[in-house]
Length: 557
Image (cartoon, rainbow, N blue to C red):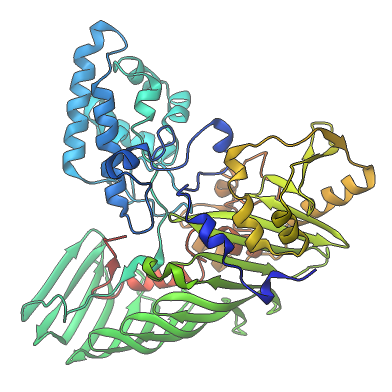
């Protein structure tokens, strides 16, 4: 088989540009939910307002505004569920008008897919939450957020009787209120950009800037940072200090407890040259260079051990992951190789990646595992290739299984496998038989939603069924135990057991949607999403960005 790493096909690029679907959480497609800004209406609002589906250059704020404006007009054209609730419905619509006028929506700071966020880390509440808050008070809204922060309204109502009663008394149907609730795009470390005091000059003199995540204090002279500078976190604790002359000097970043987080040089008001990051233990976590405040050139990341075992090595170009990256287990053995695609015709998308390839080397089970993630309107669409001893399987979004001849493989409740001819074109079969996972992905990724029927099912022999089961079972098992430091980066304040509660999805055959941080290989795979955000790589940078002056998310994204 000619593997896809010999050439990178651009077929996927052209085909993915033809659609703008967004990634839903695992299992939600089976509930009939739609891709896009809302799980009932999709992106109908944006299409109606602009005449086209949202693309990567369309800001998230514009997408949310279009959705809320659209759904408000739709709700205003409908009657209350009961005549006696007409006044209540009118009152809630007025509250929705107030929310839209504020123009503030929560941020999805944690989940690697588009998701509702009832109340975010900064206390910003969603539209439905705001309506509940106005009717029942903030404590009620915060109670819901504590237990159901990322849940859809349908699920909240099923588990919280007070919410179900509020809906019944609102004058709206469940579907109407659920059609308000947006799903918010996943966070991206790449979106953090440094300030540019040349293009956006700041007056000379004392500088003080306070934001939700902290404050910055210093002095500006002739457009350059001068003297002592301090960065504080949201709790007013000092997390960064520097002494600069004409924008040049050294900077020291710390964790909230005062332990060293990072240190390096500044030049022209930006981090420049070699920087070193540290684990909370004090051991070296990463080293590499910045150029004009952007990650650039080679970087190395290390396990939190006395030997300084590498966990990742690779290259950044103008702030984004570039070229080949190598990933290592806790013993320093090669676990996986990854690389990005940046076709020339995507130049108008800035530095966005058209896709990412991950090659997980065979372990003791002998299964070779390839993964491709394609970028569609800022969300990931995934296909896997498993190969062992002449048996090859393609898995679309971790759920639909094909063999290289275009037959869909299905397992029934008795555990028996059957095969159905899906009438693949010659182009699909050629790509699959050649192992060209990139081209095949571009040809089949819409099959997940289109649901085109395949032929009659025919039973698969027992031996072949057992081989398929064995391969899927091996891939679902822990390939390489994640180090403790990575688990903490993945989970934040959650525990491993709490994370496991979120990964139930009976259709997920290979753990494609798992949030569990136990397996390093799955952490790599499930954090490719629409932009690569490996927690031990991007997570470290985001930590450091919050301790530096002038950094913040690019508002245009």
